[in-house]
Length: 184
Image 1 (cartoon, rainbow, N blue to C red):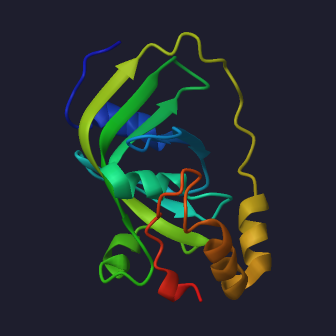
Image 2: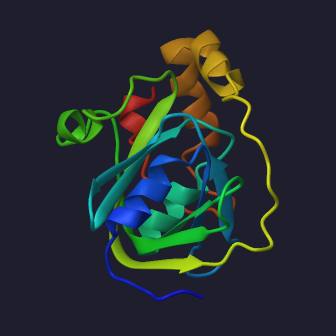
């Protein structure tokens, strides 16, 4: 493991800006750990101690339930090309939903994407690089358009119904914090 730090350095930021995929890990106090790959243009560096990512509607909403329960989140990025490296960002997160009073300010730096569910703001309390020697070299080809196409095809009302049916409770029965009054 490399040297741990408490904030993002210019080198960390440069590394992050070159990534096409990141991984988000959360866990409830008791229950299943969640680890999800993320892509599209959804990650932002706010400053050297704050990052954010826009979360799109998907099959579950485990991250939101875990963050609501204990706030813990780890974000990992890997170099799949070039020099080997793994960067982990440890922090405490909170979710901001469309309709929340701070949504207009928080969402400013993100693209408007169909299926937007929430933005997670992560207050960084640790950063760690590790070697990445075991990470395979892979070539980035392109973003998948499937999720955006699916959300666009469902439309706003279809997404609201999907979230109400699938995203209000976690696999462990925890509430996710989605404002159900906005969903139907």
